[in-house]
Image (cartoon, rainbow, N blue to C red; front, side, top):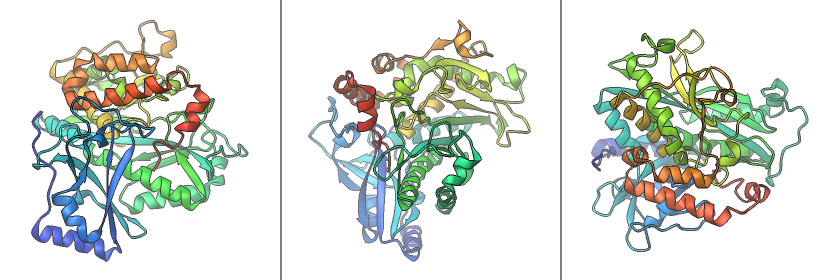
Length: 450
């Protein structure tokens, strides 16, 4: 995909008005963030008087920002090393006031000459979304955020009153839940629902669906807000795939709906459960491409420990209507689905780069549509009981081998992003492959928290 510069740039009166709005909201500082290949959010911060420069020219950042690892190591590639410089530009059109005198904006990497940098995750999602629109396909994406609360020292919360999906569990942390819901709404993130999840201290927040780029931005902002509210309550929040050994894992489920000329592709057709031909092909592309792209959705050193049969984590490369053990769950168009039919990808987790995960899911669907991919047979039972259900790669090493061999992933993400992701994840595998799960969960419990 061509590396054009489609990031909107405010100038003249629009820029003046935007900065005046921020000033009037009490903003004194602007923080602009990116998400690296390890799934960690990193940022630059400027006083508001420098916001225009942050937006138009950008702040300097080493190319190594793209290959920082979750343990703070740097996994250099042939193209990303100690020489060179990038510009980190804040997208003021997406800036939000987050309180305490701060505003937040998503940012993108550019080269010094002003051209988009190839290994930029947000820029790549922007390009994949543009490719979908050029093909006449409109995509809407919804994200679910699972996280585990701990005490202020990072220890498990007591189990009293905790029942999965329990009313008592919600009410025990009622102040936190109410403040979090209100804070998310205040920054412009409509909340669909909140509930206590399976694990002690675990919650799930579902955000309203939006176009892909805005939806991914919303995940970063929602994590930031969740961390703020938790600290206000004397708590910490973990977005680790597995916060505690033997405990519940955190997923990061993506919901994708597709339409052409306003007509849904996942309902209203004559295929299984109302799928249109193109909707069936999209699901076929996702299912067939999953084994080779799992390293984008769940490629970290803790991902494989979460992705196990019997945990509703989507450990099998198959699809089924409302099948919660399948990696691809079709949510049918019924009275109970006001947003219409969609597919839920269940195998992803919060250690993924949300921009790359969203781009890859959409890219797999577009690839399926483009080549009229065959829809695999539906799995209508627990995939463990169906011999046709393919188990996704089971170790980080196997996940990365499959990713490196995936031509589909390379076409969607490009050579430089692929090289950076593989370098970072291979560092994890080589450095921590022999480390016990208890030590891993302790070491990386807050690696993906904000």
